[in-house]
Image (cartoon, rainbow, N blue to C red):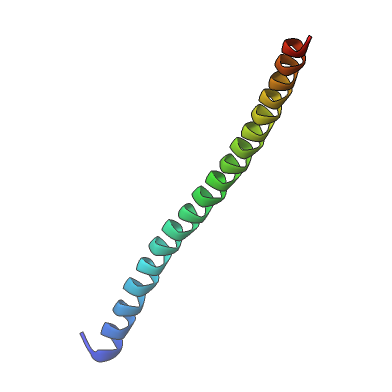
Length: 66
């Protein structure tokens, strides 16, 4: 194998490794976006739950005042 053939082989290996690495990066980015969407959904649910509890506390307070 001469230097040019070796260079070609190294280039092929680099391209293969870069492609595999890119797949991992894309998968990680997708997972992070999904996790962020889930976090936002849970934040909304938590906010609504807190609002509901505040309403119930208000009702209880009004009922106790009577």
